[in-house]
Length: 125
Image (cartoon, rainbow, N blue to C red; front, side, top):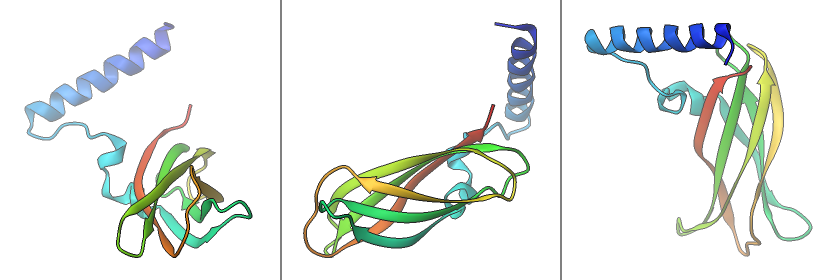
């Protein structure tokens, strides 16, 4: 591990310790309420093979370059999860938008909806 990486780890550990002592603490990116708000479903359909596909618009609302892992749930009309899938968006610049597809991992039949189930975001290296 190089010196710069060790210093970065030490800075994060010190910041977390100070935050904990003051009653705060560092939060994981997936706990930030705005990470999920950075992703919108713009389309929901099946591909030619019967697999569900969610069309997504992803925007980086932070002040640094970010990587994002977006998970989508494909639910039947009664709310039952029929399939799930996801996509990873790498190196999204601050304010930059990306159009991505998240494909379900199995065939579905009947009507369904596409719902963002989870978004993890972290600073891109």
